[in-house]
Length: 423
Image 1 (cartoon, rainbow, N blue to C red):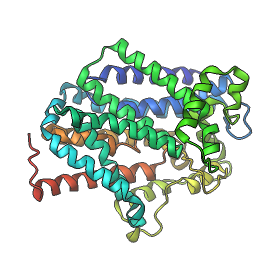
Image 2 (tube, helix red, strand yellow; image 1 turned 45 degrees about the vertical axis):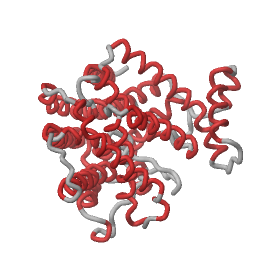
Image 3 (cartoon, rainbow, N blue to C red; image 1 turned 90 degrees about the horizontal axis):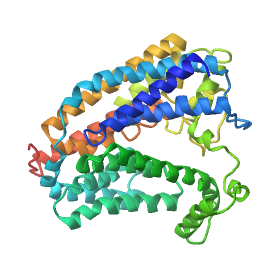
């Protein structure tokens, strides 16, 4: 391994330590973001360099020394700045038990989310983002109800997790289930204060589930997305059981031939960016960053050229590779940083991005101190931000506009619904 590889692994290990240490004491959302990024930008690529998958497309396009000499310092800069900024927030411990006083409000928030989830198919598509945010209110409400003294209301928290799982199985899409489950786990640790060994045991069990899910996911999707007429829940359970019980040869047939690490490794896309720019495409000098800023502050009718989610345009521009319109792949913010500002500029940009996210966290942290109910909305606000593969336009657009929706809702509830939230 290269020197920068060791530094990168050390930084990921330190972030993991910070994340585990913070569980049960605070809400380590930014630590989670850094950990996911480290696994996908550093650990996945190192595994690929050590044991190549030999896939015709999903491989590392540049040597380890070239890749790590940019990504490792960029990741370190990003992580250190965020960890330094949020360090001061660790002195205040959230009194989340106060949320039990908001059970009635939590139920209303939950029902708002359910209503928008049920009727999302008949509402105008132009309101897609707003509908998405409001439909996710059901999970915000479930978090508040988790602290309710009413046992029936408290069960809604666990029903929400079950709904997430069933919905993910029916759609064969599991990303949101994994993310929301981790968020729910954070609130569980805030309530029950588990020991470090218990937290680590939970991580081991979660990792086993995630690895098993990765093993069967492609085979499951292949059947579901090809109009499978049987019971999808039964199919999912059978494939999960088969992944444990069948031999190695048969188990390999459950997958589509793509190594499990390929799914973890965001580095193959980042390495394609390093290989393509500036060899085949000039540095973009901040063009996509400017587009992302305008997209986040202006609605589409005022910005008709607004970039669309999905990543097809940026993916082809930055990597020189093509993907079909029904496939969504992001170049990640660190890949976008290099493509816009080159090696040194890209590292500095990651520092500025870390500074921005840290300041946003301090702003939201102040709101939580004023009114604890804001803490239940934090996962929704950071839902896209913590995804390491997502590009800037998606992350910034979600971050800014979700905060606007949340603050407008709280303002409306206090002014017109007469909610008493200042406790």
